Amino acid sequence: MLRGDPPHVWHQEVDGPLDGHDGLVNDYFLVRSGWFEPHGTLPSADLDAEHLDAFRWWRLADVASYVGPGLFSPRDLGALFAALMVDDVPSAPLLLGL
Image 1 (tube, one colour):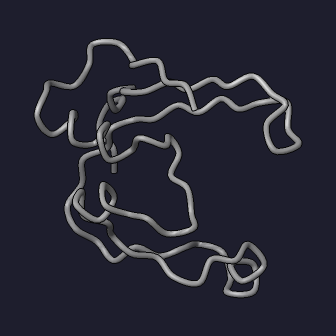
Image 2: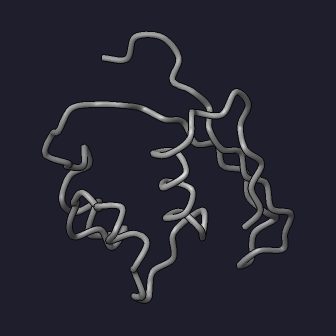
């Protein structure tokens, strides 16, 4: 259970057109937690329809070195996570592009 509001660390706005959409707005919050087994809440058929076949934790090194076909959002997620681990949590959300 969250106690209080988590820090708002990043805000992303991209005006479209973007892959057939008008654009995107994403807000990212830092939520610290203990380890837990990641899993979805949707039934397996719904997860299959969304092409989700597994859930797993990613280490920072895995994110930073990933070269597969998928894309992270934000694209520079590895560098942003690394900065959160080294620097203090920003006092205001960092504004991001794509």
